[in-house]
Amino acid sequence: MQRYDYLKAIAADAGDALAVCTGWSAREWWAVRPGDGNLKTRTLGLVSSIAAGLAVALPRRKVIAIDGDGAFLMNLCGLPTIALQNPGNLIHLLFDNEVYEASGGTATASRMADAVALARGAGYKHALWVKTPEEFRAAFVQAWQQNELTLIAVKVEPGQPKNLPPLKLDEIENKYRFMRYLEATEKRPILNPGFDSKI
Amino acid sequence: METDAPKASAAAIVTSLKKAGIDFVATLPDEKILELIRAVEKDPGFKHVPLCREEEGIGICAGAYLAGKRTALIMQNAGFLNSCNALTTTSMQFQIPALLLIYYAGDIGDRGFTTLGTVTEPVLQGMGIRYYILRRREEIDETLCGAQILAEDSKRPVAVLLTRSVLGVG
Image 1 (spheres, helix red, strand yellow):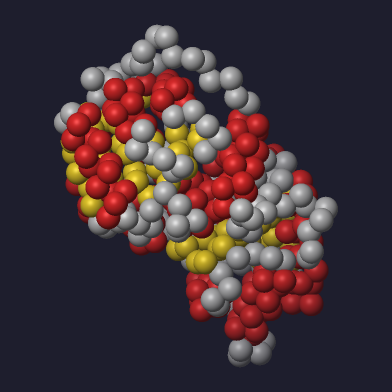
Image 2: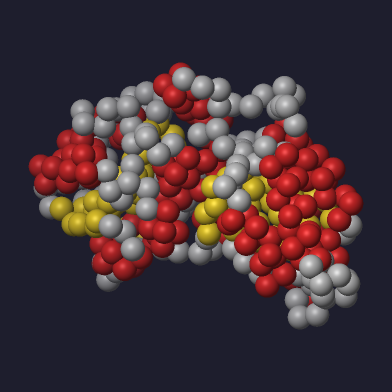
């Protein structure tokens, strides 16, 4: 099973949740849940922190972080920060393929490091390993319903389907569309044009 | 130096941050910015996020900005150095404003961190981050409000270096 098989399993349950992706997962997530509520990040490790910033700022909105093991391990210090804020609306998904997939497939340390134990140790209210897309979906739906900070981790094979549509999105365009989508769905102005600032 | 100087400086900075519209502040302490962080923590006008490492704060503030918050990050200059990749590949890459309040350790007259002080301004310059050195309490308001306008309008990080004198600390 690859990450795509798991993302496909929850796409229909993700509703209008905001989704923050890293690495190759973006192309897969856009394929299964297209829309302007998706954001592709650039800095290795920060996907969970950016998602947490959104979740803390928008406590009534579901936010999904689509994390990978390389990024997760790079930002371990971000876990206690997130746990301290304890955003119940954040669902942290970890796809652990044990390699730095986007940068050529070198092994990460995740064979030795138990991500669920790390998240629990950092103070996450819930953290669990799942083994099948069905378990993954059930855990996702439960995290959504109970509205408590949850890490759902799964071991996956590296790689992705070859026939995925290419992600034709400039990242600045992605940012603006994401913010405009938030304005439309939150029904309030968000993007400050600067020169109209009331300072 | 007046004994309540650190508190008075912290209060002045907090007042100006609010006037500038800042409502979301991530922090990591240095002894010299303790009163400032305490004042931020106490003020219900801010969502305060204490950090474990400054770089994640760039991510958290970026997420909050996308949701309509006006963000500031309070840290020491070592923390600024810790944040350089995130500032480059998140803040600048995605054109996200960020007000950086950086305690200037190793500034003139400060013992212990002169190496850090030596590299701080060249790194800011190398990254193309505009920065202002704040030395006098009378200049807090104009500098912080101006820096936030600059950050929002340029959609880039803007740094204000907080010196011991403006913080009222010995």
